[in-house]
Picture 1 (cartoon, protein in one colour):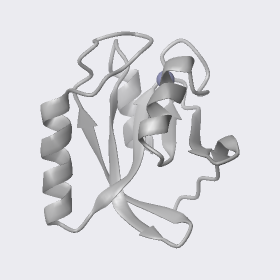
Picture 2: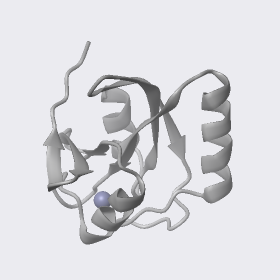
Picture 3: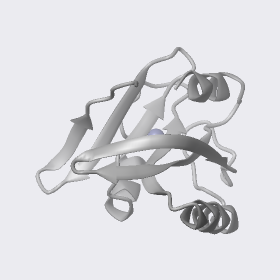
Length: 123
Ligand SMILES: [Zn+2]
């Protein structure tokens, strides 16, 4: 988590990437974070570079890890999903972790009943 906050702090644009790990019941266990280039190079939006996305997923799958989350940073606003994020969340129904350079962190998932906050626990 600290690493992601550092990443957000050291970047002038939104950073983004995957959280890889395993699912255990209702829990998403994060084992590693992999940054993917934000091809929009924007301060208030991100889009992961598609080829790098595919490569990262392939490599993770070879090690029997799956996508258990998407992370990105918000530079100028609180860690709440933007309209654009909500659209992306329809395609990736895993927790979306949002970090800010100030160190605020929240995770969200789009479930059947709409957007829900995901409880984070650090082990
Ligand atoms: Zn966002």
